[in-house]
Length: 125
Length: 487
Picture 1 (tube, rainbow over the protein chains, first blue to last red):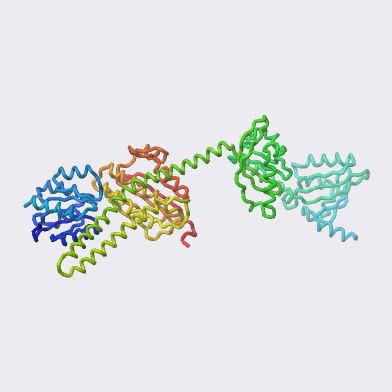
Picture 2 (cartoon, one colour; picture 1 turned 30 degrees about the vertical axis):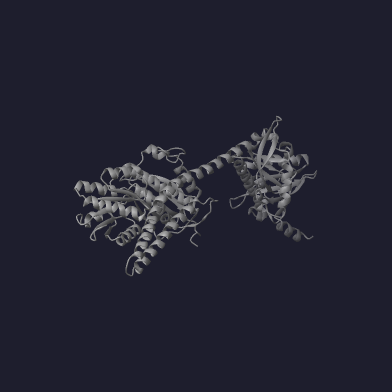
């Protein structure tokens, strides 16, 4: 089970998705912070504070995959769970081989996302 | 009748009665109207040599000659010639008379200037009509009320296999059996209406008999003309081929549209995943909240409100797609170009994001509506935007951007532009992009822009590309605004 202080970041440009994930994760006992873009996340989030990052793949500006590359370049260790509305095997392969913990297609069952988060947190523990 | 009464009558009908010496044409007497005809007083008319001196130099020799011939032979004569009036103008006159055996000749002079002018104009219009008839790209016949060919252009003669001289005067039923009676039926139906209101009959096929005895199928459209009718004649084979080509084009347009919308449907499916994701997550969150201790009523209600919103959002996307798939005749209704642009954004948004292209709008809020087929115009715009996405994707620019703009261009209409900072086009490509089956894309059909241009031109508009100074291409779409569209 998550620690009461576990913080999850959500970066997604779609307002509905952000709101619903925030509600779902809160109701599941997580602290949640949401960001509308990769740039906003890099600017405002404290990388060391969170347990994991839920990251949309396709966004205007910095894409999810570009943000992942930025993490690698900066040496951040925050585990990433990708979520996407697009079904693209190449993108999925690239994301996973670059170290992503999971790659989940929208829409998804809550348990699929929660399991991925638990696994990501355990791997960091 | 008194002498004065006779003079009045002659003046009223614009006639000069005269008596002249048979050997010299010196006037011995002229009626009072002579003074009005040329502006010379009557006394001057009676001077020796007056007549000959007042005849227009170009007509003088012939007129004098013909008069003395007739007078010498004691015949009736009728001469049309020009006379020079006192104020310098030229007057056309008709001189009639009869030279008997008496030493004097009596006759009358009438001003026929108006008649001659009219004759001249008629001749010119007829020449125009004949020239026009030859210019028409179809065969053209005029058939008189007795069923004979009155007029035929060269094309009609060639098509029907007759020298034109022989075709004119022929009974139309000899050349195109059955056409004469069709023409009579048409006149019967049109009786009482003016020729202008006579609607063109639909084109019908006939079997024409050529002079050499061969038969050829022709498509003929007839319309009443005076007591007869006129007919346009086409080679029925050509006409059928033309119709087939048109059908092919329509079918091609439909197929290509389906292909475009196939891509769009895939793109929209991705787009639908966003609200669906939110709905499922909110639903699951709601279920969890209901199982938890404490009063979570407010939070559950907020989740349900969001679910309803996202359900509606998904429904609206599907409605848009359904509207675009709707098949039907092109309609011309007032269309707001700005709304059209905004309506398309949800459909192409996802495609643009996938290619990392930023789509920006630059819309002029004060635009009159255009008259057009919303679905067709949407199709054009979608094509242009997707092409622009392709162009910026191929270019790999740092900040790929596609700008859709609208602007009024005076009273002429509306200009819509789709500008990209993509890979651009060389001159050769730019010259060929509207050619059918020309494409620069590996899986392109090469019909997108061809069809776009056809649609735009059917709306009375123009579609063309220009190269941007800073790179990339702008497509310009100009559509006229009808003056009464805003009403």
